Length: 354
Image (cartoon, rainbow, N blue to C red):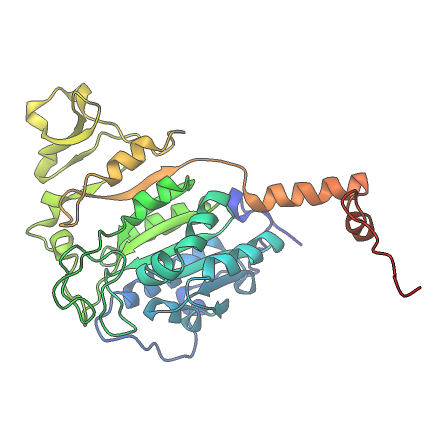
């Protein structure tokens, strides 16, 4: 029997019969990531958060592609699939569209999602299938031992770019917003409370939710996000987004986000502007231009990096629209396969041997 949990994205997903704890979502498999890898923190956060949803473990599915992060399904005591390189969104889309009784999650990395899987990612986002995509971004290829990735900064020296990368990197949040994703967020592996709050918001969203997670690879790209983690610098460069609140950051809100004469978002000293000129974050804005402008505040050096929910809007999900079409076809009789096969555009080839 399906039980409505009061969360649109989880309506129809059966609820667990008993209360669960984080240990209920842990498997007996040895977690095999490099010591100190940020994936450990993300795994613990997900395992600690899932009991809040109160779902049966057999109705939760994690689908991954290829990469260090893609070992995730082995460590989750749910259903899961370690699929093929870059194709996790496609597989998860089929699962979510055909099984509305499941909570479907995708775990992928910056290489898996944005290189070979870039096409699958953007189409999952624009279709708005009811699934959640966790994109672990460490700005490097970790599993294959340290080549530059689609998010590596220009000039990055790696095994595959000994003289420095020439590629301009993707901004995953900008990319998702450009694909008209209905939910886009960014968080950091080392901030457990913030990570959990973003996961909670993503789970509640009906449709495709993309969560970019800055994740440290301490073997091949150690300290890539230290500017945003170090207590001496994080308040200066990290911008926390909260829906409905003025965008202030720095020590005691010393800096803020305002619009310049051309309408672009820029950084200013709070004391130098009028309170009414400080931009108020609106994650529910129908037009994604506000969220996109926020995503462009930070550059490759990570200064002025916003974290939190950039966009959260409602749009009919692909799976619901598909189900409605099936129902309509059944009512009109178009669901008969023979009728479809022999429609107006079919013909019979004569048997010339007769």
